[in-house]
Amino acid sequence: MRRFFRNSLILLFPCLFLAGVLYVQSRVASEPASSVAAIPVSTTDWGLSFQTEGAAPIGNATVEDLAKYDAYYLGDTSKKVIYLTFDCGYENGYTEQILDALKKHNAPAAFFVVGNMIETAPDIVRRMAAEGHIVGNHTYHHPNMSAISDQAAFQKELDSLAALYKETVGQDLPMYYRPPQGKYSTENLKHAQALGYKTVFWSLAYVDWYVDKQPTAEQAYAKLLPRIHDGAIVLLHSTSKTNAEILDDLLTKWEEMGYSFASLEDLPTV
Image (cartoon, rainbow, N blue to C red; front, side, top):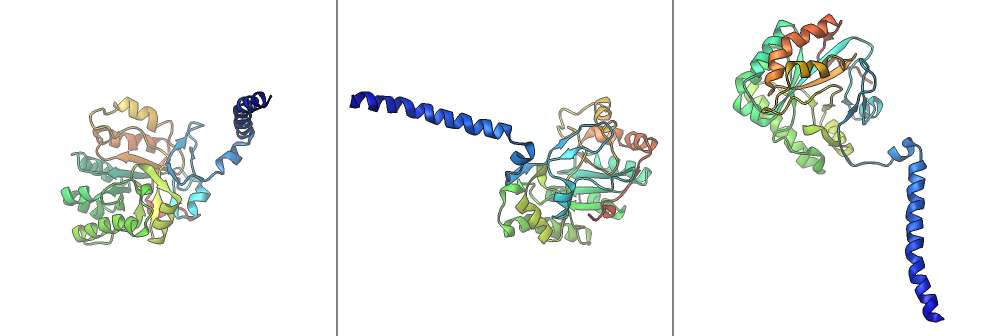
């Protein structure tokens, strides 16, 4: 009898455990999305959801939440204005063509550079500054900054880039920061804010960074034209051959849609 009772318990425990798991899963599945989303995530990749053509996408953090840390992914959504930004990991032979197109359209832009860009193409970086563009901080080595929790280590990545820029250009680096690969954490946002930086994400980008697999002009337009929206912060890569070739025409098309171009210095204060 004791053996029967003991064996019954051995069989019963897994059943009870499975029932408990299923109960918890059913509770989570039935919770409202806002309740589940409230669970904090320490590290995340910046992401967007485009739901309506011509309307601003939904980011994985709200404008209001980002504003607490002097961070942005949208500009002034009450105006047909675009904020052009370029990530510059290195010089691939196309940045001057991009600068020519911006100059033709009198369009200000922000170039987020890393140490390699300043070291290998100092004249181009000096040209960016001389023509009135913002040169922003994309860190010295382009690491995953969300993996750096130490304030001093975080600061060193930004300070090293800022020091190299001042040595090269003779000016202080503008206080705009973009996390490499869009990887960030709340602690990163706090660190950047404490150093006086505005963190700048984006509300429109497309896959333009594969040097050996560049999109066609038609593929680029298919992403960049229908998804443009008021207050868009556009991310393009200066290493892209396609971007260099289409930029003049792309800016013309956006102007024909009624858009003008603004500097990150004109971002609204929330």
